[in-house]
Amino acid sequence: MLKRPLKISFLVDDNPGPGCQAEHGLSIFVDADVKILFDAGQSRLFLENASQLGVDPTSAEYLVLSHGHYDHGNGFAHMNGKRLVCHPDCFTRRYRAEKSAYIGLKFDQAAAEKDFDLILLDKPFKISESVTFLGEIPRTNDFEAKQTTFVLENGQPDYVNDDSALVIDTAAGLIIIAGCSHAGICNIVEYARKITGKTRIAAVVGGFHLKEGSAVIQPTIDYLKSADIGLLMPCHCVDASVIMLFNSIFHCEAAFSGKIKEF
Image 1 (cartoon, rainbow, N blue to C red):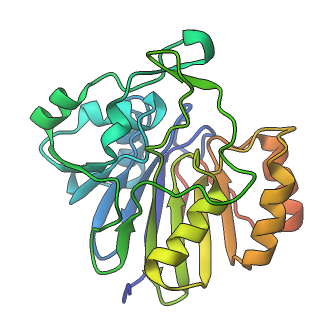
Image 2 (image 1 turned 90 degrees about the vertical axis):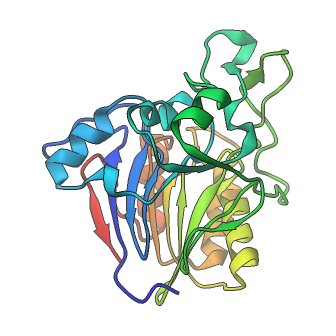
């Protein structure tokens, strides 16, 4: 359990904040009992925004890639020499439906092995006393991750099995940081509880991958109500209309490039 305050800094989000620019992507600097750069957006913007915030990404002891999409991982091309934790499938070549656009990483596994101390894991990995990388998320409920708009290089559906998240054990409860939740935010919360053996959720932060009109929205709301989560901070790949809906139902807080949150 974390015995000191946790601070997370949103270095990149789809929405700008005071003094910080936006791009489609996500990057969060985690300052716990270990310093972690969780995702790096799609460019060097995370470095520029970090400078505005007085955050030094090079001080990170670990880099963590939530999944192998360009808007979460391409920024890591501007870092090297660090331990990079990710699922083995992050380097899969992947596309939007019918191969209309390449959306995978711009560097392959061989390049990553050259530039980083690469730690490939599909199982949970305890980064520190308080922080755990969840590895591959079991998809156990009957409503999430049942459809996909992505394909692999061979044309088969890509369900982004490499999608993962961090869970931080704090005195207030578990704090879950998700990249895009292609595995389903509810599946992620359940797995975090299973892995830690703890049920109290203080906050869920990051991309929930909920699009306007999706049939997944209502069962997600129903689950999150039953989960009794203290705070939600949906961002990045959550449509604005869905965030507004969540704001009317849950205790939510806005996230944007430059947002700093302490727990």
